[in-house]
Image (cartoon, rainbow, N blue to C red):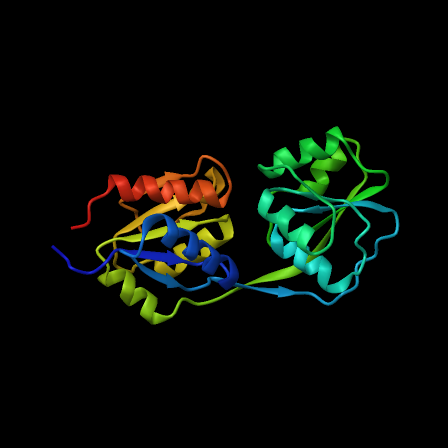
Length: 240
């Protein structure tokens, strides 16, 4: 029996990882090592955003909200947000926000059911799966997009690889296809017992790293469902 504690490896940007780590400790207690090693850093752009003809803002991430708020003082445009966390960020920035409480497809459906006067502007990062603005345009809505932040890849420190190799089990939640690809690449050829929780089928498909001993796909694309997935793994796995 290995006396070492199982490991929770968090690879999201620091703010999101710290928030998730607190929620994890509240739910599952302190019987885990928690290592935060962001695989990407968010860099907000400084370029002004033209808003002529825009009647509504579309956000699919908190970072999109931050990117908009950094360069624009407009707060009179309605914000259409993919989920509750993004909508909360928009409200904190001073915008009137609606949450689709689901996926990008749910967001498009909600907007199409009650579109604003004027065009729609999707504020997003350099790397995004799907094309929200094109999908909106296909429904007959005037829609554009603007990249407002970069997701710069980071290298995992050597001590992370050592921690994964030594841990009896590493729980690894993956929230995006890009993070899955980046972590896959860096863990390739490394030792360790991995149990994955993925946010969507697209994230699962993007994983190309070591074969996990278990994989759970979240029922919904949100942090609460990811936490439920970790609970399912914790309840169903034994630590050697």
